[in-house]
Length: 263
Length: 285
Ligand SMILES: Cc1cc2nc3c(=O)[nH]c(=O)nc-3n(C[C@H](O)[C@H](O)[C@H](O)COP(=O)(O)OP(=O)(O)OC[C@H]3O[C@@H](n4cnc5c(N)ncnc54)[C@H](O)[C@@H]3O)c2cc1C
Ligand SMILES: Cc1cc2nc3c(=O)[nH]c(=O)nc-3n(C[C@H](O)[C@H](O)[C@H](O)COP(=O)(O)O)c2cc1C
Ligand code: FES
Image 1 (cartoon, chains in turn green, cyan):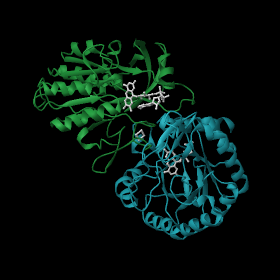
Image 2: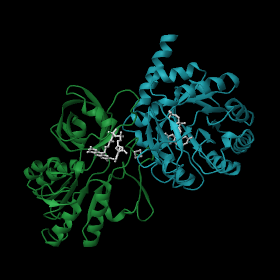
Image 3: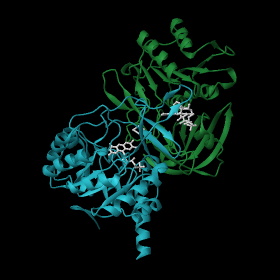
Image 4: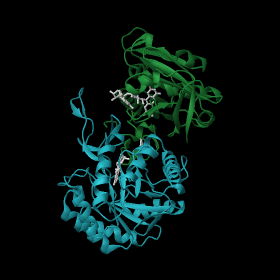
């Protein structure tokens, strides 16, 4: 972990309210693993006090990329930054997705992305591609113009399926419905591992579908974070067995089985 | 060199309780032995789970927290956290809290046996526990707690004051009369935030403690008032984000300062603050 001043190499709108920022961050790029995140100081001054957590979307050749959605004041300020400016980034933070050694990893894990939850899964798919593993990727979006990273996943060799809430493309409805369809039609390999990131309600339904069908599932959780390094105790996640974990330090990726879904 | 009770600090910058974990969390970001002192998260006799989530919320230039003293309890602290703290090479101050004077005294007695504990900070001002009022809001209760701890240990005692009172000088005097070697202030200000979409408070605990730059002017005024009215050293805190902020507290009469919320924003900030104060001191003399 390091706190570095990183130069912005590019920061552009991708579509809708989604932006992509690329930072010159050699240390973080070198050590980043899929599922890990960084804490970015979006604004100078103290008015917007906390840093904002963003998943690492891609890390290569000394650069890191983040894909973010403008939802409030911090991301708004971030979206106005120009290339050449600097931002403070802290990372890489947390534990990423569990990547089983190539020999034991199932040939086709299932990656499930909802909205901006796509961000960390691209990194994961590209890491899997390096190991010659081609996942199934289910992308959920509100409407077809907001589908994220379809090309990136395809480039990584993934079998991509789409779900849109408004039925404008692919499966009509939530991505959890699409997963049930994939399972029903047997279009996946038995024992496939599921990696999931998206809004809370989506992860809950994905987790319970996986539980029902005996699929191992890892989810990447979002909690409000002040420090991101395990010091403030503001991001506690309660496990089924009553144990308390920190989303920033012990997560943000957790075994869905161990979480109490009702929280 | 700064003297507080029996403590000899290499510089006036400490980290505030609950904002620096048990120091190890920050080892990648600064040279820990450069800190004047490390104050640990508040420790209680038994482990505590803390409050339900959500526990934190950002506010304009500040934050609210209702962590609820989540900690592993004194024995686990001594076994698992203290050995690391002991090796750092700076003063270790353990923050403690109890439900009554007797619990405070038991905690102090236990810590008295630990050579690597240099001082004890009494958190009599945490606003998050569901009790009737706070010890820190009552002069007699403050006196009783400090007196009990004084009997239990010869180590340096720092009493941490709550700003949620009408007469903070009065409470500070009580703590000193009961044998406290110093006072530290301020703890957080009780506050709340409501989410207008859900029409519910943003913290599960409803209210929480406000900290960060937004409290600095009030904290500074309180430190100034206390410092000019008591003879014992005053440790000032509340919203320190830079060496300049820290120097304001020193000018208001504080002998040392604590840095809290700023550690979340910039984990290596204390080293910068130490350097800045050093430069200022040299320039002045
Ligand atoms: C580990 C982790 C990884 C993340 N990765 C990404 C990512 O790759 N891309 C991305 O766009 N976002 C990501 N997020 C969410 C992102 O941190 C928040 O969207 C951001 O903090 C919002 O800041 P803001 O100042 O723009 O919004 P604010 O003004 O703080 O809030 C605006 C609205 O968003 C809600 N909100 C704020 N923070 C969160 C949160 N953490 N989760 C859910 N709702 C929130 C608020 O309740 C409010 O309604 C991640 C969060 C975590 C914890
Ligand atoms: C998340 C958080 C947890 C805290 N926990 C404690 C604690 O356990 N014991 C204590 O005495 N003070 C605790 N405090 C209060 C700080 O030590 C400090 O008094 C207060 O935050 C004001 O300083 P600041 O504005 O620099 O943060 C906590 C503050 C925060 C923000
Ligand atoms: S964000 Fe501070 S402990 Fe997790």
